[in-house]
Length: 480
Image (tube, rainbow, N blue to C red; front, top):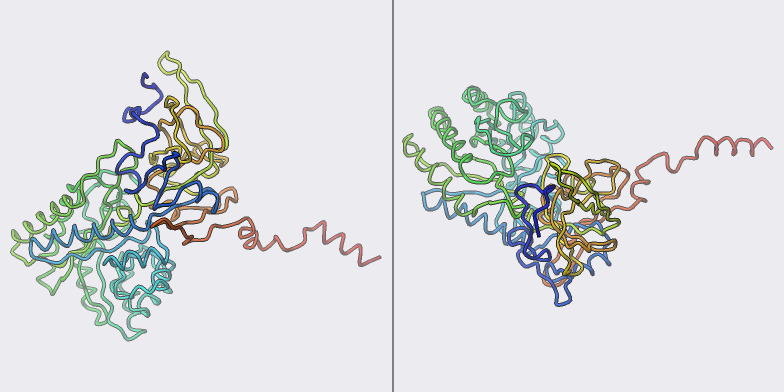
């Protein structure tokens, strides 16, 4: 069939619109003989019947295997050049007590970025010394709790924060290990909102200010300077940006050694994953090896020993392990004209949307979808999966090809939703947030309870208060 002129240039008509493209979906996802998708050994129709839709589904085995893989990739790469690498899971991607336990059991530390994330990690039983605490505006209460709990490292994000962390450490009679977050000036090839190391943004301090601020940190007897931290962005393909940032940081690291020990260097995370068949991510082992070779060469050139290295993947660990299940509500063909050619796009509306996946609206993020409750021999057609919210920008999947007989009642699965979907979810239009269900070895269990309308009303303090007209009627009744 000919290409649809409404389709983006990267989107190809699939040979099989029922197939789960490798690299986009959990590795073990397949179809039963009757065509129903199976993830973690559990049929999606059973999941939908038991838990409803929308539904976040997380393959525990996939999370664990990806956590173990990224840890091995960096530890092996840096062992080969003569140093140690520590890997933190970036909890902002998705954090629950179960996920915190999974990744720590696979050897990862955890990076948290708020008091709430800290509370979740501690509730999971993660040793506080295996936590790092980020944030550009950590409150006094958050810092106090972090120091009290014994958090391993606090990342200082501004000059003002130095005194605040020192005060919290003094109040608890502790010496607190800290890193200083710096902006390396490397512009990551990613969405503007996901680039975090350029000069005109809120995170970190300028490289030119770092030496002075490290001197301030070292002057506090209650602070121990552990090293530098830099995060250049998120959803980055290829190692080149990390290598450029590492080169600049090693030069600064060498200068800081003149004033005292600098045991660590943290290059952050941001390793990209595939959301569509057009994404080319490369292998994490190759990325780790490239970065290790650059760091080793830069340290050798500067005549300094290799520091302990640290990295903070989040999306890489949990993103491809998650899918979201929806139920199709309506379909609507729309005829449009493109350069004199009439073409059709089929709008497929589902029972969720931007309240459970804000990334398309925030970043123009692309996703991939498949009918999950059956297979079809119908010719593929260009679709746009839309949500149910009162926003024209409420798009879940901007463009994909699905069998042309997609219909109301079909279960639709969207790939790679494990990261930054539940984390960014909201109650827009008073939509309850979906449950998160873990699957593995043929079993499923809810790890985050889904919300109900009763939950929303329970937070509305006026819901249990009589309306003005009701109060007036009550008053009239009392007068009679």
